[in-house]
Structure formats: C-alpha cells, structure tokens
Length: 295
Image (cartoon, rainbow, N blue to C red; front, side, top):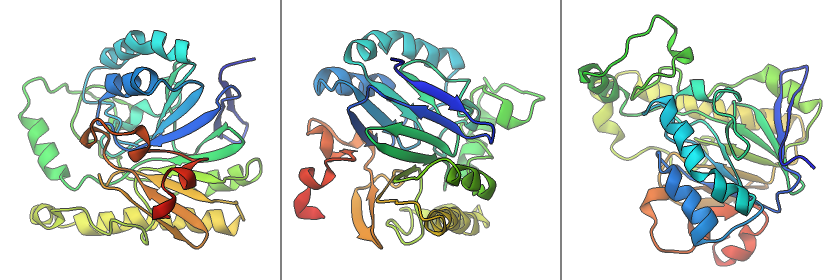
C-alpha cells in the first residue's frame, strides 16, 4: 500500500489520500519552527501513524529553498520511523510559490495548494490558505533596507528567493474550484489560515497603529474575512456536511459551535511550552473528549 496517494484530477483538484494514517491533528502557526514541530510530534509525544496539518504561517520564504530541503533531510528518518506526515497550508507569512503541490513535495512533508483535498481517517478535508499581514508596510520597508535583497525579473508569485512579504498573500475565493470539488468530494472538515467574519478574533491586536501608514488595510482585512464567508456559503449551498473548521493567524485560542460547525482557533505554536500537545493542536476525532468542559 502506498503511504500517500497523490491525485491531480482532470478538473484541477489536487488531492492527497493517507490510507495508513490513524490520527489527524491540526496545528496553529509554527513560524519556521520546523525542527521542534517534528521533535514534539515524533519524540516528545511519540505519536505514530499521524497526519499533522499546519494551518498556515509555516515560515516558507524567509530562507533559501535549500534551507527547507535540509530540514527535510534532517528529519525524514524520525518521520519515517514514526510513520507520520506533515501537510502545510499557506499563511500570510509564507511565500505562495512554495504552495503549488510540487516545489515542496516530499514523502513526509508537503506544502499543498489552495483548495487541496486531504483524505484520511474517513475524513475529507478542504485546505484554503492566505490572510492579510497587518504589518505589511513595515515588512516591505524593512526588506528594502536589507543588503542581501535579490532582484528578479520574474513575477513575485513565481520567485522563491527570500523576502519578508508577498503581495499575493490574501485568500482567494475560487467558485470554479469549489464547483469542481462538489462533483467528487463531500467536505466534512475545513482548515484555513484566517476565518469567517463571525469567528473570533474580530480584529488583530494593535491594528490601529498599522492603519496610520496603510489606509487600505482595514478594507483589505474586511475582504479577507468576506472571502471566508463566501467559501462557507458555497460549502453550505452545496450541502457539504462540514462539522469542523480550524484556523490559526490570530495567535490565540477560542472555539465555538455556530450553526452546526465547531470553529476552533489554534494558538501560536511557539507560545506554548511544556504542556500537553492537545492544548494547542487538536485531534479532529477526539476534541470533545479532550476538552468536553469547554464545548
């Protein structure tokens, strides 16, 4: 049996199946802490046969491509021995060029494109990345000061050289892709980086200070959340049996059941130390057992 079954259908749907996975876990932002992620997954918590999904802000693009390839070589033995996989969803602090399903695609590690479908443990999971960086003006200015800046004649979305900000960071609502997905899949779980507008947080902290030099920031953030609203509406219109929606981005923990969907905001990975794994990543089949008093 293949460890991972990869499919690209005729209608452009990128899908992965993990027939050997026995557990699915969703993690919040890791911000480049790849090695610690693998250590905690495989060594500290000794998880096996586990699919771990990172809900954006993975940290792709701040270093050269070789850095991430070296990370894979360093950790692949542990991942093979534990029979684990890590799937990365695009955040606003990721270069979208890595998330085409091919540039960063290894047996145990893969960065998936928006509207990728993951199938494991009798779940069908839709992954859609992207969000707005509230400090984007600062990031652009800071990068312009860097001596090692690499100029490229290629459009930025095809450039995998280092940077601090990527203009095509926002989530994209793709109705054609959703229609194609509807013909082949029934989605029960959604993993995104940001969230629909009725979910916490309604605003990121210190937002006001960033709007002073970025007059279109508020409007762009509102459209970011509206994009998630459109995605949710399409899922409901097509009668997908969505029961769970996981997202990161806001660096806090919150959950609420709204109109039959349990929304779970995942805390920043690096802010949690020396506590049980399930306090900051969630097994989608056992969440009610893990935190029943808070549901």
